[in-house]
Image (cartoon, rainbow, N blue to C red; front, side, top):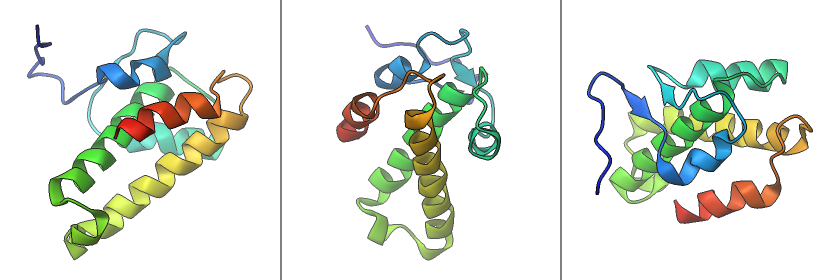
Length: 117
C-alpha cells in the first residue's frame, strides 16, 4: 500500500532516508526550504531536530534534480549553480556529521542510502 502524501506538507521524509533521523525527535516533515537547517549545522556544528530531516530532504532534492535531466551535465545552465551548491552543502554536512560523536552516524550509514540514489 502506497503512502499518501499530505498536500499541505511540501516535503516529507522518504522511507529509505528515515534511518538518518533515528533517535531524533519525531520531526520527519520539513516545511519549505531544507537548506537553512543544513547550513546552520555546517556553520555551527550543532545538531538540532531539523538537521537530519532537512539533510534527507536536501539529498532527495539533489537526486530528483539530477534524475530529471539524466545527468548533472544535462542540467540547464541556470540550475547547475543551485544543484552544485546543494551538493556541496550536503557533502559538507555529511562530512561533519560522520566526525560528530553526537550524530552516531557512520560512513556506512551514509554510503548505503546514497548508493540507492
